[in-house]
Image (cartoon, rainbow, N blue to C red):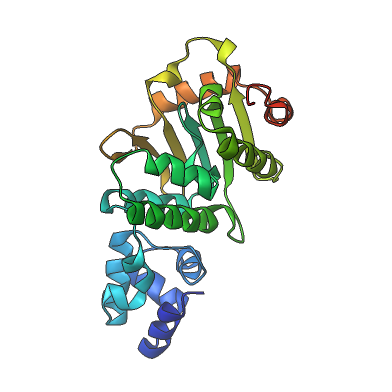
Length: 248
C-alpha cells in the first residue's frame, strides 16, 4: 500500500476517479498506483503530484531509495507494471531468476566494489519481489541458452539451478532451455526482454555500458519466435535442470 499517495489524495479531497481525470489515465490505473510495486510513469507521477499539490518525492518516497542506475529506472518501472515478460539470455541467468549468491558472483566479476555489489544484489531482489511476488504477477517466459547454465562454480550453480526448478513450477513462469545442439541461432546477437504493457510492447536491450528501451519490437518478436521453436519444452527443461549432468 502506498500510504503516502493515499494520504495525499485524502488531504487534497481527491478520489481515484478525480485524480485519474486530472492525470489523463483510467481510474483502474490510479487504483493500481496505491498498491505495492506499482509506480507510475515519470510523466504521470509529475502530473499526479501537481494535482495533489505535493512534490513527487513526497508521494513516491521509495523512488528516491532505489540504488539501481538512473538509466535502468525506466525499465524497472516498466517491468513492475507489465502483464507479460519474455526474456532471453545467452550468457547469464535472467536477473529476476537469480539467487543472491549467483547475482553477487556475476556483479562482482566486474568493476563494482564490494559495497556496490551488495547494494545491487539487494536492489535486484527487491525488483524480483515487485515483479514476480506481487498479488497478480505477470506471465514470465524465459529462454536461457544452455551456455549460461554451464558457466559458474558448482557451489553457486547447484543452488541456482534448484531455484530455477522451483520457479519453473510456478503457474505464471514458463522456463525453456535452449540446448547447445540447437546450433547457431539469432539470439546470439544479444539478450533482450519484451514487456507487454497497457501502452503496448516495450523491449529492453543490454550491452556492456548500459541498457536501453525501445518500442521497435517487430524484429525482436521474430527472433523470439525462432528461439521458442528450438528451445526445450517446459517439462523437458525442468528434467534437464534436475539432471545437470554437466556439473561436478
